[in-house]
Each structure stands twice: as structure tokens, then as C-alpha cells.
Image (cartoon, rainbow, N blue to C red; front, side, top):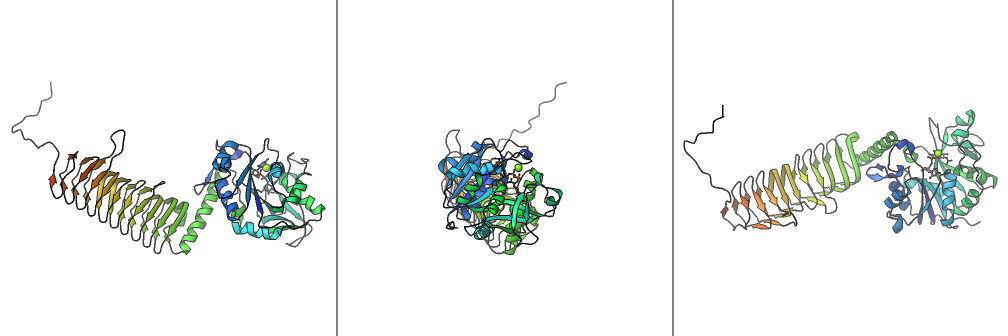
Amino acid sequence: MAAAGTDAIDVVIMAAGKGTRMKSKLPKVLHRLAGRALVHHVLDTAAALGARSGVLITGHGAEAVEAACGAASGGNRGLPLQVVRQEPQLGTGHAVQQAVPVLRDDGLVVVLSGDVPLTQVETLRALVDVCAGDSLALLTLDLPDPTGYGRVLRAGAGDDAQVLRIVEHKDATPEQRAVREIYSGIMAVPARLLKGWLARLDNHNAQKEYYLTDVVKFAVADGVPVRAHRITDEVQVAGVNSPLQLAELERAYQRRLANRLMEQGVRIADPARLDVRGSLHCGEDVAIDVNCVFDGKVVLGNDVSIGANCVIANATIAAGAVIHPFTHIDGEKAGVTVGEGALVGPFARLRPGAALGPEVHIGNFVEVKNSTLARGAKANHLAYLGDASVGERVNYGAGSITANYDGANKHRTVIEADVHVGSNCVLIAPVTLGAGGTVGGGSTITKDTPAGALSVARGRQATIPGWTRPKKRQ
Ligand code: UD1
Ligand code: MG
């Protein structure tokens, strides 16, 4: 038989199991690690492997899992995806049997599980190389406590000893249970061979299940080489069965990511108190204090400093900017940009479309949404800027707000350069404040204000001399 090409990889992802121990309505593979569903990690790895297609086996929570993977439109993670339902779930062998009708004969099948999120693509590449298109390649590793796993039984000791079969924990004798080398649940095998072996599976075992792992003994019987690729990194094959395991894997993932960032020179106050749930790109001399969460795509320029307890999502922060503690930035789709040398926080909130120029200052309890602030503009205390264009050097007083919403539509406020807005002003949009003008504190501005003038719009102060307060009735 011709060797199956390693450039024609079809990935089968088993994701039909129930995940009883998660004790959750959400199907297990949709629980999130680093902000992404477990199955998305697996699909992304398969895409990175350059697989030509993926076959997702669904069962429990099938509709939700399929929707999350964009099954109706052929996949949403850079990998053409087909879905096959397994109902009822009669074991891993039965799961892969369901994929047979849609698997092409000329390919190399890599079997993965939807609940094993942290396998590295290099590991799968190595497994595919070991398979070499003509053998059954198993990813294995030694565990100090192999309880529950399938054991790899060999003809003798050592890596070179021939693999004879895999025995599941529940079917194993005490001697077999003493074997520490376990099967990870990941294999690579030519489709043509796999299909033949799947047709021969039975469920005569302790769990009355069709075991995928029984293909090993068929390979041996057929004289097809079985090659184990033994790795040492447990995290790569660790599955998620419980909230505890999910949290442990999350930490393992975050720790690795923090280590990579520190290797690049990022100063992380405590790598155990950092969470990156997307991509974080850092320039030189970036410092990140404790308990920060980064989500989506975040870019930090050179010399950026992030204070403790900040949550930052979908934002680009330019060189030298300082984000003080407890700041919440979420650019969602529109993004947030913070200019060079800007100061933000503590306790600031930047929402989608906030675009701060260089040297802008945004202070405590200031909210900015869909607004641009030009160089040097300042809003230092207790303020709201929504749908506004703010010119250079504008000073926006404490307690002032743009009234941008009339109950039906949003309107823009334009504040030209060098305007000084006093404290506690309401700017009723649409409105334009002319360059260099001043708005007296407490004004409600409903009409455009001229450049260079003082505009005041509030009740005049009145004085009633000798006025006596009402007295309390007896
Ligand atoms: C399986 C292996 C075992 C290996 C272990 C590694 C078998 C028989 N045993 O055991 O040798 O050490 O993985 O983690 O393969 N699934 C389905 N349909 C089913 C059953 C399972 O889709 O009918 C899915 C599950 O959702 C899961 C994956 O297959 O994603 C593995 O199933 P699981 O029950 O965890 O396998 P184990 O019995 O632990
Ligand atoms: Mg099982």
C-alpha cells in the first residue's frame, strides 16, 4: 500500500461525551480556557497543523457545540469542518466509526479529543512524522499515577520494545496497572488502515464500550508497525473532566504564557497573578503589576506601565502610556487606542471607540465612549465623554457630561481646541463649543458657543437678606 501523504491530514475530534463531572448545563468542550472554548483550542491546533479537514463528533449538547464551531457554514476556525453525530455514545471506537463515511481513504487521520486543549502543534507534527504514512502512531507518556488511563503494553522494557496493545484501566490486571506508560488519547494513522480496524471492533470488555484503543491489537495482528511517540509534558495531553482540572490547566497555560512574556523582557510583578485570554503583544520595558486581565487583542508599546487590577480588552496602548490601577478598558469591536505618554486612571473606563491622543489625561471615574481626544486634552475627574470630538489641550471639568442620547438617537459633541469646560456642565448634543471658549461651571449648554467667549447657562445666584428658615412644628 502507498504511504498516506502527511500533507493530507484529516483530524477527527471526539466531542460527544457528557462531561458529567463538570456538573454544568454547558457541554464540556464549550467551557473556556484562556477565554476560548476547549474545542476551539483543539480546532485551532488542527488548523495550525495544516489539516485539510476536520470531522467533529458531537453527541451531548450537539447543537450548542456545532453552533459554537460554525458547523453550519463549514467551520469558523480556519479549518473546513464536517460534523457527525454520535447517538447514543457507545465508546471512543464507536465515536470514530461515525466519521468513517465522511473520511477520505487517501488521508492520514489524527484523532484528538475536544476536551484536551493544550496539545502543541509541534507534538502533533512529530506524531505525524512517526506515523510516516504507513504505521499506527500513538502519543504516549509516563505518569507517576496512571490510574484511569489506558496502559501501553509492550513485548519488553524500553522504548524499542514492540507495542502489543492498549489495555483500559478497568480491564487491566494488577500487573498491567503497574505499567506507567499511558496512551494519551491521540493517534495518527492512515485512514485506509483505520477504517478496516474500526469495522472489527467489539464491546466485549468491562465497560461494554467500543474501544478505539483496540485498533492497536489489530495493527499488530496485521503486521502493521505500531510506533509510540513518548513525550514528557503532561499538560499537552491533560484532559478536562472537572472544574478543578479546568482551573489547573488554566494556570498551567497562564504560567507558560507569562514565562514567554518574561523571556521577551516584560516585567510581570507576579506571573501567578496574570491572565491573558487572547493575544498580548508587548514592546520593550513594559511593566505589568498584579491581577491584570487581558482579553482579545491587546498591544502595549515600549515603556507602557499597567497598574494593579486592570482589565484591558481589545486595545492598543502607545509607548510610555501609564494605566493606573483599577482601570477598565474594553474596545470590543471598535477598539480603544491610547496615545503616547497618556495617563489613564485610576478607576477610569474606556469603552469602544475611545481614541486618546498623545499626553491625554483621563482621571478617576471618567468614562469615555466613541470619542476622540486630541493631544494634551484632560478629563481628570468624574466625567462622561460619549460621541465627542475633543480638541487639543481641552480641559474638561469634574462632573461634566455630554448628553449624547435624546432617548432615540445619539448626537455628537464637538469641543474645539483649548476650550475650558467648567465643573458640572451638561453639553446637550448636537452642540459645538468654539475654540478657546470657556463654559462656566454648572452650565447646561444647548446652543453652540462662540470661539474665545465665556458662555454661562445657569440660574443667576440670588440673595435674600435676613431670610429666616422655616421652624419645625411643635
Ligand atoms: C480514553 C482511552 C484511554 C486513554 C484516555 C486518555 C479509549 C477506550 N480509552 O479513555 O486509553 O488513556 O482516553 O485520556 O479510547 N467520547 C465520545 N464518544 C464516546 C465516548 C467518548 O465522543 O462514546 C469522547 C469524549 O467526549 C472525550 C474523548 O472521547 O472527548 C475521550 O473519552 P473518555 O471517556 O474521556 O475516554 P477514556 O475512557 O478516559
Ligand atoms: Mg470513558
